[in-house]
Structure formats: structure tokens, C-alpha cells
Amino acid sequence: MRREDQVSEARKLLAHLDARTTASAGDIYRNPVADYTCTQQAARERDRLFRDAAINVGFSCLLPKPGDWMTHDYAGVPILLTRRADGSLGAFLNACRHRGARVVDGCGAGAKSFSCPYHGWTYGLDGALLARPDEAAFAGAERVTHGLRPLPVAEKYGLIWVGTSADTHLDPDALLDGLRSDIAAYGFDTYHHYETRVLRRQMNWKLAVDTFCETYHLNHLHQTTVAPLFHSNRACFDGFGRNSRMVAARRSIDALRGVPEAEWEVLQHITTVYLLFPNTIFLYQLDHVEAWHIFPGDKVDETLMYVSLYIPEPVASDSAKRHWDNNFNLLMATVEMEDFPTCEGMQRGFAAGALDAIVFGRNEPALQYFHKNVKEVLAAAP
Image 1 (cartoon, one colour):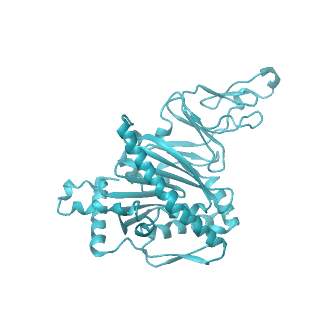
Image 2: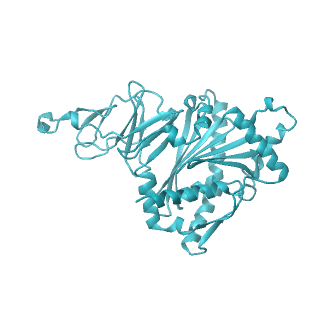
Image 3: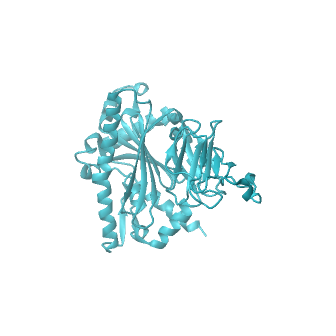
């Protein structure tokens, strides 16, 4: 976030604290429980939002060097991402052009080529078919036309996007839709990947997104974990196209009072939550980023997600490692022991018919904004 925007958001937060208010929507919003339980809607969301779409994969530092590679299957499409010899990114369908077997699994570094485990067809970092056993047997299938099928990939501001179909149009500035200056100001292209963990929970994917879209619950659900660090139900909110930004006040923000604005170190006293529609959450905390990538599972009440910790400097000591381990462990303890069990209980209540709709209050504008955008996208789809 730019310096001038940091100061502006801090002013708003201090005003909310003084007035005991928070960012507000015009009215309450009733969201049908069927949004979380309807199998037909779940299928439409997978098709419209994930299987023919631009997906944010994470930070560029996931693939820092030529020869680095990773697979990505969360959107329902088998994707292989590579850092080519010239430093550019490549993205391909992870399916051998011989019989369709997966060429690789997982991730790795220092690769020069990939060899399919089924029959040994070998591909370069650029997806080109380099060699295959018994070449003469495939004279009618020229190598030049049998490389891995490419997918669109884009890299900007230290972030990576990939298209889940060959026809996906990728324009990072358009995808950020007003958040470009915010994201560019952080310098994410200099960050380092610390760790990624994968979670699977028994709840609709939108419930996982909902977790990050309000601060109203902090004092109640997180009394002994993160509530002592934040003011509950005090936040700023802005929409940027279908994306959004919520800025929460840390309890230390009162230290800015009486200090000239030119001397404010705002980022030390706020947490900024970005939602890159539909499923990517970036939490900027003090100097690091917790990134959540949330995907629907095979069932309406299943979500698959991965959370990554990105840090400003590489770990160079045991004390630094302990520091980042403690940060990550606090995050995971909060969501794994408090947020997500609560959401799974909600999902079971929805399935039991406990209520027809849930209520998003005027103090929950980010929730209202997200769900209205999901509805608009689905309504516009053929």
C-alpha cells in the first residue's frame, strides 16, 4: 500500500475507534444457505470461477531460479509451471502427449527436462518434446507438434497467475482492478517463500473465504489467540472491481496518537486483508504475507486450500527460524482450532436445515461485497 494510503487508512481507523464504529454497508444482507449446500451451484462455481479462469498461484519466489518447477491441481486442471532457462515462466497441461500420463508430480529445482514415467517421453522446460524411445515408431506424429500443451501464464508485481484453459486472457493490471498501486508498493518481487501447508476441510469453499472478511468475531472466537492483538469490529473496507481490501486495527495503533503524521509507521499497527476474487487472500502483517488460496473440493461441503508464508529476508539464523515458525504456528492454531471447526459446524447446520439464510450485518461489508460478486458472475454466465 502506498504511504499516502496507509496514512489515510490509519486516520479512518482512529476515527472509528473514537466513535466506536466500523466500515459499514448500507443495510443488512441475507445470504441464502443454498449458496453453501446446492450441488448445482457448486458445479457452476467450479466451471465458471475455476476451470475457465485466471488463477493466482502465489508469489514469484515459489519458482526463484531457472529449472525450478511445481505442479498445481487445485483448480481441477493438471498444471505444470516451470522457470525456463531465460528466467521466464512456462505453464503447461501436465499430461504427456503420448497417452496422457502425468509427466511429474510435486515440485523441484534444477531440472533440465522432464521424462514421463510411463514411456519415457522427454520434454524441455519450454514444453517442447525433446526425445522419445523408439522414435521411428512415431514417424507420423512429429515432435514439433507433440510438445506439452501450453497454458497462459503471467508474472507481475512479484505475483504469478495462470489460465486454466488455453483461451484464458491474462492481464495482471486488469485482474488487480484498482489494487495495482497497493500491490506494487510492497515490493513482493523481493520476498522469499518460507513454507506452504495444505489443508482439506469439510465445509464449502466460500465459508473459508468468509473467515477473512470481517473482524466482528475476534473478541469471541479468538479470545486467547489473536484477540489480544487486534481491536474487534473495527476496520476499513474498499472494493476494487471484484477485489477488495479490508484494513484492521492492531491494538498498538493508539501509539500513533500525538505523533506527527510524517513520522507514522502505519504498517506496524494495521493488518491489511486483500481478497483477489474469487479465492485468494493476502494478509499483510507487519512485514510478511500470509497467502491463502482456497478451492472447492469434489463435494459441495469440501474445500481444499494451501497457505503460504512469505517473508522479506531469507532465514539466516536459528532465532529467525524460530520467529517465523512461531508466526506460522500461531496462524495455523487460530484457523485450525478455532475458525475452521466453527465453519464445519455451520456447514453441518446448513445441511440439517437449521436456517434458510444467514445474515451479514452492516458491519460486515466485505462479506456482502464478496457474495454479491459471486452471484453477479454466476448470473452473467451462460
